[in-house]
Image (cartoon, rainbow, N blue to C red; front, side):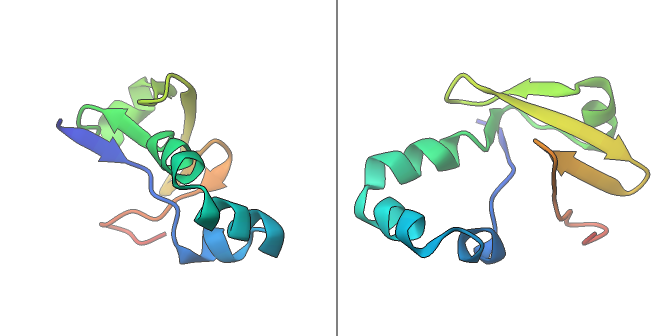
Length: 86
């Protein structure tokens, strides 16, 4: 660490098709891989996100960050922030 986490919330899991969710719950390795794809090595605050539109995940993939005013998206999915709860 330190790490920055773009964690899926319960609504994200509820939006999955029931069969996919069941498969993830039966496969801890696959679930772990998906969740680690949301973890970035380092601490990133809003200002750093403006300057770093792509951040590497622990799994080796990229998280594409977009900031538009108070709206922040990661891989085109809106995220909640602790400050603004957008």
